[in-house]
Length: 252
Image 1 (cartoon, one colour):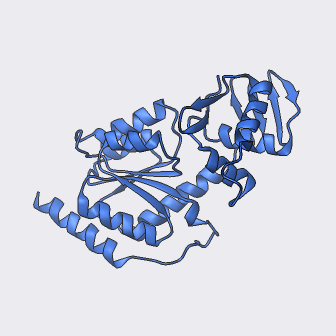
Image 2: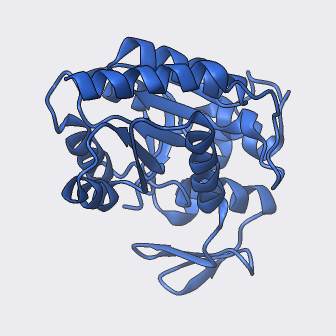
């Protein structure tokens, strides 16, 4: 217990000292676009993580349990997830949450941030997540690892296949059952957004912002029209409506 308290105090002090103001990293990553879900049940660590990462340009949402995490995951889009292992639901609740997220087709990169630092814990964390960092930590390293995961996620594969649908990014072509489909430029971009993020729910506003740019009329039904175009060409079940939230790619 004493050792954990020392670690906790070290984490809190580091968070308070490291509050960078830069909005771009050396690779030009636009941090304002990084929507970050933080799942951490220790109030002081959670607060300082949120403040420090927000000051670094992230857009953090903080929750303290797996139940609260599920609630926001289905309602809001996130680019990254920072996840503690020991949560109110149990000492391995973070591992369980990550496993269930993958089973539910959430593909956001997960960085585990935890006091559990044994080799078996690290191995298990890397099985369900993408990176693992033990407490105490330097907030600068947390931010650097998150940015690296974000850049990794931005690296687009040349070909993405789901069922009969194949998307070829270099040629900007889409095939269904081997047959080339005729898509407009914006139809392709909307489909690419969904296929590169299978299972993730996108609100209409977010699709408008990503495809047509910020400031586009939020009352427009343009997204609904383009989803209908894609369903007509790919099948009604490929893009699923999540009532009250938006759309997601199911690939069915």
